[in-house]
Length: 355
Image (cartoon, rainbow, N blue to C red):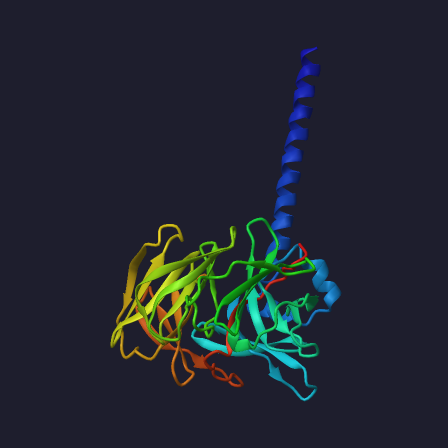
């Protein structure tokens, strides 16, 4: 009896050892398979995606998302009278111009999460929402028609899901009206706009940060910004820590609203607003390197503490906060210089307004 028990225990131990060995072999095999897959840089993946057929992109949307911040250039008309969509990538001290395998029929009005809203020049006032990577697009219902210099558009992602397109417009009496379109719905909805006289100019694109859209109301000497909170669609006036001049900008950085301003001849200060309700700006950093009085802030890099600037001659500079060094971005062959007002911040992604 004891001999049978001993044999049974030995057999059980052997089974356990074999099971453990098989598990280790399976893990090693899986690791070898993973190690055999080559690493593809994001730029390479992006170039592959914009060349894929639409059907393949639709299938891959739910398993992959690529986001790389870049400058989306205003479309340039080509011989077929369609607009080629190009973008400029600024990274590793170089600027490179690339184009999507897509065209559109007009100028870019708004951008959010990889989606853009563009004019449809075939029908006056008509807008199209599209993703230039997936080439998915859809016509939007007609809204209020005004000349481009008397209106401003902004596309935002809502906390409750989906996207809103906000449209501000100035009528003949200088009143600012506002309408909102929930993407997917068939009609615009009128809401109360900002108080009379608050916004005098629509030259700067609105900035989305801390749950609100923000407009700089004048081309120069702005004492405040005009803010619209997205959840309740109410407008507010928030005072700036100092007067905003022509080369100053507000921008989003790390989910906060930043005010980048020229304090002195060779000094740029960065102020941060943590929330709309507090309205309290905090000075967080000062840049004082070389002659920087003509530099216009472009954007903060998302994954590295860097701030990009545009010079008056179209050159791009980058300030690295870690080594506190300002360097000029090298322009690669075939890359043209940025011009003021001819670019929009954008990301490459596979998102859709339908999901």
